[in-house]
Length: 293
Image (cartoon, rainbow, N blue to C red; front, top):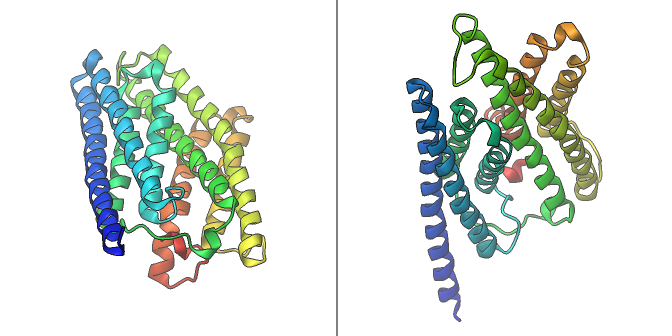
């Protein structure tokens, strides 16, 4: 096979992948719109269709990721384009796994699918889909371990914040009515319990992500910690979620303070993942993690 044939085949695969990813992003958005429609119309059966579409979308998204692996011959999360796709996928999978009890309640599905679709569209419209070989810092066995575990924690925190936001919004609405967002007052507490359980599950993964990242940094750059912008924000995110878990043990903080910390942790997590890249470019702050931009 000639070099021209190889390049032509690679370009064809990339075109197919991008088109499929557009379909994935659109389907995530359709699921979000249908979830919102169910909230507005307050129909009990409206939660089934968004979840059915989400399940189909995840099958298609799995195919896109496998195609990327076949195309590049490596893990599918080196570039920001790939990482955004992986972030959407893991968030949606996590939500679908934990949401079986509440599929008639559309708000968590709306939040998660909206975030997933926005990440996909940002990848498609704002990043290059070009497949690149692994840069020297990524040529380590820490690469897969660190990224998979860190993104798993991100996915868990996305879903936790969706349940937390649902709890807070429904709690406010139920002060003036007997039924809101598909929930009665006695059905509200499990949402907050699930949000807490998810943070308890995700926090050790985030901790491992930071420690494995430090070990990887020492292997790649000869130091464990250098207060790089992404390192600093990962520590801030870890601290906020640690404060959230501590707030659970203080009765007067267990409600409003803890809920605020959970949502703040989500914002810090997004800042760690994406915001640091924007600020580094905007302010000209050097970052050793620029390869992921």
